[in-house]
Picture 1: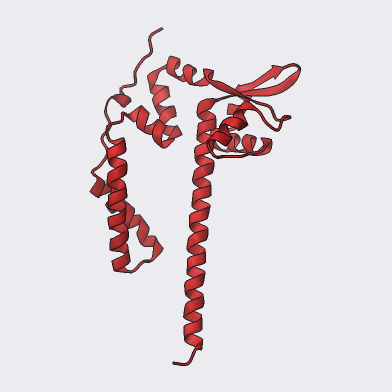
Picture 2: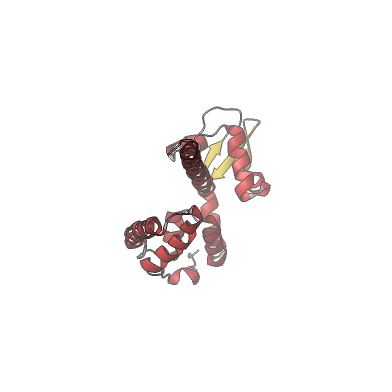
Length: 193
């Protein structure tokens, strides 16, 4: 059986780095920075964007989606590429056993920097892929229920958990900075000048 290529994956062109930096600068306005700091931030974003753009602009759609961990795009591509490519993604599996503390699936997640207990793995798979994904992975081995979870699902879970942790850290940092700023303002108002 020949592998069909998706028509979608033929060409991808990212916007110019300056356009991406403009968007990022607009989004960063929510941080309420002074114009000078916003400009400095935009320039830093331009440099970071240019470096990332040079790294990614030669990739095709599939490679770009895999590099960025964009699972909805990968699923869309697999859907348009035909049955064979979608089935091939479900063949590469790692075993997950709720009863064990260590299994190949959790070792794989640990290599990606994500340490989850069995309920956390199940919860994240259900959250990002729906309960039917787990049902599709269910197997019986030695009269025990185990799961043969595809590698792409575990990669997606790892990417989402890492992204969520980064966002929590970012929000926490900005909250602490805001609290420090308010404390300084409060002290300045109390002190006689």
